[in-house]
Image 1 (tube, rainbow, N blue to C red):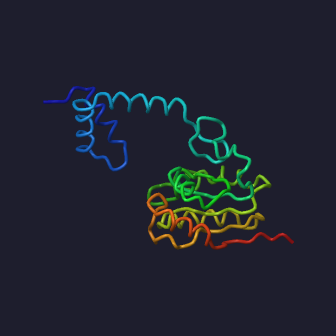
Image 2: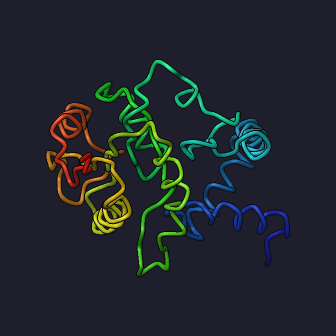
Length: 204
């Protein structure tokens, strides 16, 4: 017996989520249709709204409903520091830790040659334009301490070599292999405060 086409389409759509295989997608579909049709409707409307309204901030590349996100539009934040993170979830963690009052750039990924993800796929060209706005004096690399995050950090450090900008890396109070999204706020704040300098601009 085959599923109705609309059910198969729903299961296939749910499989695009990370970590969701065929069995999990099927269970989710059955739950939404049988146990929580109201929740299914809210999910559908929320997805439609997000797709219709969300874009990328022109300056920091995070998700936003306006050309500039709330943080980039806030003139009270430090304009001379730019913290580079992999994903919006990392930005939110740093904000919750209340350890940083500058601005951000969100790569929306990390370099992973094994997965075919290169520098162009993580918006390094857009990052360079953003950082060279004549206001940024320090770039703080806050990519994760995974192998992909370290490769990304190295590429960013090389990108800013000899460009007159100080480059630092958050400290290894972060566990090796750890991801910002899952680290406790105290450890994250300490890592930002104890960041190490990678490059110093020649101001002579």
